Image 1 (cartoon, helix red, strand yellow):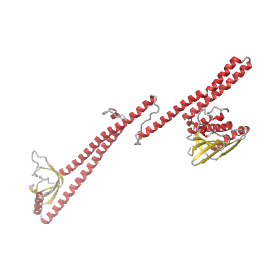
Image 2 (spheres, rainbow, N blue to C red):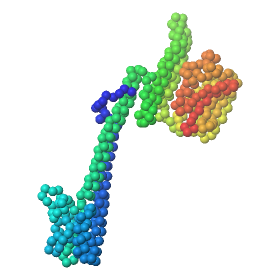
Image 3 (cartoon, helix red, strand yellow):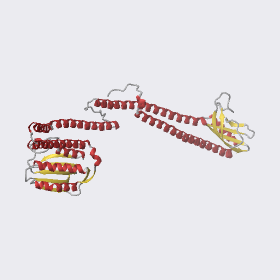
Image 4 (cartoon, rainbow, N blue to C red):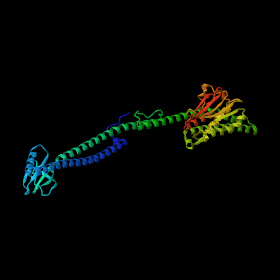
Length: 461
C-alpha cells in the first residue's frame, strides 16, 4: 500500500477525521459538563462537611459554657488554637473586646459569616498579605458574649481547584490524543481509498484482472472492497461472455450466411424462370429468418444474463405452471410418437418471471422432442427435496456422452450426434441463463438411458 505524504492536507478534510473530531469535541463538551456537575457536587459536599464540623465544635463549646462557665471555654479556645487544628475561634465580650481566639471583631448578630483573616491570624488582615478566608458560625453565650467557630475556606478551594485541574488535564489529553489518533486513522483510511482509486484507474485503462486489496480487518472498507470485487468479477465474466458470444456468433453464423450467399449466387447465375427465382428467394428468406431467430435468441439470452428481468419477478405457482406447460405440449408430444409423463407436487411456489420460467421449461421439452427417436417417454417432475425445489425434464433417448454433458449449456454447442437435427444450440443456454437469473442451478445428468436436465431452485425462492 503506497504511503501517504506527511502532512497531507487531505487528512483534515477526510470523513474519518471529521467524524473523529466531532466525537472528540462531543467528548470534550461532555467532560466540561461532567466536570461542572462534579465540581458543584464536590463544592456542596465540602461546604456541608465544613458546616457539620463547625456546628459540632460550637455545640461542644456552648455545652461546656453552660456546665463549666465562660473561663473554661476561653481556656479551651486558647488551647485549641495552639494545637494543629484547622478551626479558628473568637470569644468576644459584650463591649467588643477579644477574650480569646484569632478571628476579627464580630458583629452583634449570630449566624453564618465569612471573614478575612491575615496569615498571622491576628486581629485583622494586614496590608500586603493575602487574606485567609474563613467561614464562621457566631453564637451568643449570654451576657452579650459571642462565640465564633470558623474553618478555613482555602482547603475547600484547594480541593475544588484540584478537581477542576484534573478535569482540565484529562480533557486536554483526550483532545490531543483524539486529534493524533484521528490523523493516524485518516492517514490509513486515505491509503486504502487511494488503493481503491488506483485499482479503478487500472481497470479504466483496460486491466480487468485488477482487484481492490482487502486488509482483512473486516471493517466497512473491507466489506465495500469485497462487494466491489464481486461486481468486478461479474463484469469480467460478462465481458468474457460477450467475447465468447462474439466469437461464437462469428463462427456459427458463417455457415448459414455462406448458404444464403450461395443460394443468391445460384439464383443469379442459374435461375431462368420466375419459378426458379421464387424458389431461390424462398430458400434465401427461410435462411434469413433462421438467422434472425438466432440473433433474437442471442439477444434474449444476453438480456436475461444482464439481470434486468428481475423487475418482473412476481410470486409464481410453479406446480400450476408445470402442469400448464405439460398440457400445452401433450398433443405435439403424442403427435411425434412420444409419451408424456408429468408428476408435479402441489403447492410449490417461487418468486420469479413466469414467462421466462415457462420458456425454459418449453426449451427443455423441445430439446427432448428434437433429439429422441420415436417411442421415447418424456418425464416432467417437480418436487421439494433436501431444502430445494427440483424441476427436471428427462427422456429415455440416446442421451449425451459424459465428455460433452458439461458443455450442453454453452451457446451454440451441439453434441456430435445432433448436428444433423434442426436447431441453433441456444435452447439450453437460455435454460441456464433463466436458472441463474432465479438463483438456481441447471445440471445435466445421465438418466440411464437418456438425459435428465434438472433445475434446482432455493426453497426460500
